[in-house]
Length: 82
Image 1 (cartoon, one colour):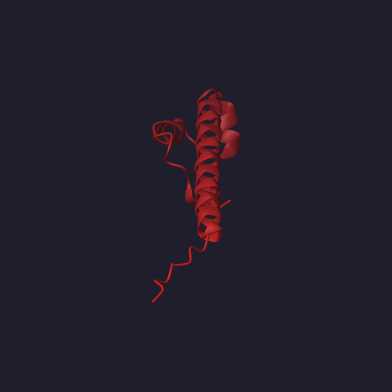
Image 2: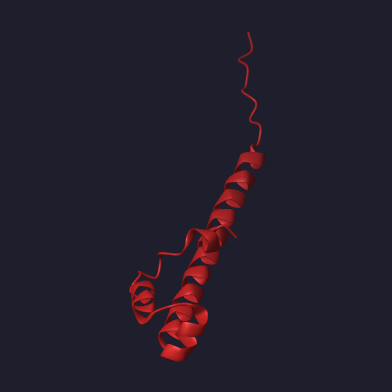
């Protein structure tokens, strides 16, 4: 009687899917980091405005202080939905 030899079927689809998921996740992370850094730059620019410019925007110095003290990763929800 002859022993049967198992057939090995290559499974390339899941590997591609895994690499795609990893790449997509990495891209999302990079995009979020870029957005966080952009928001940090905007907060620094806001801090450098004089009181007259802040009044034109409807902001007070305490509003600017509160916003500029937020951590770099604390991005407003409307900005992170991009």
